[in-house]
Length: 278
Image 1: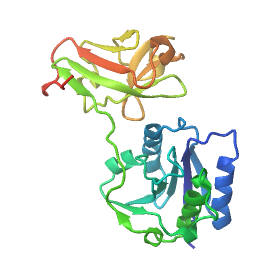
Image 2: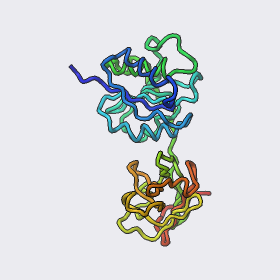
Image 3: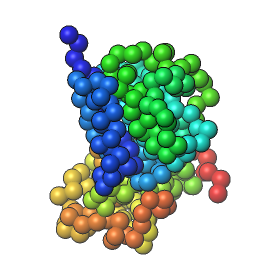
Image 4: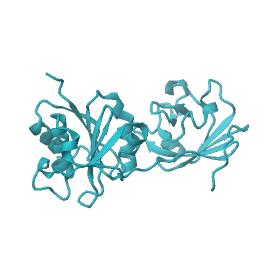
């Protein structure tokens, strides 16, 4: 017999209400042999970008044919479409609001379908809990091997957004932004080694990172290599530059959070691209 598929959950529903337990029940009622795994149910409420970042960091670590259920859905009950996105190795069930944008960006082979086959839904369909009545049953049937084509026609006008990219302001200056603050107070920026390769060299040239009320002048290879409370830059597991502190909350120390501007300023020119418009 084939191995039972896995269904993952990524939502902003939290753990204080019945929502997640109910969705698990719907899935298991359809397919009692399925394995249900939580990626994160603490996505920031209504925050589609945070949901997009969360699923994009995790999905590739699951086995092929995993069904990823992603419900961050401030448009529930409106005309926004429910969709299935199929990549070479994974299947995603989500609202069509851009929450899969980073998956789209990273996958070369992609098919997106508008879910219209209502006989797979729970009836009646609530106007406020499509996670229970639409997305969970679809994920359950997919986990049993029902082909995505059975749920609706392929579409090409699905909603997607581009993640904010760093901008070169001058030959010495790059402007980025804080995308997320994690549980440890690390500030995850949108700057990668492709954007500023010199910053991640074993001995980087002289630089200053400005964010909030802080100026940061050091890059560390591990959190524990900094002095307690010291704020520094580090290449995090996400592949982005993090602004962190050893055994302390960098966000509190620098007084910055998501959306804060980050400027990387080198003492000598490092960038050759045309400066971005202000």
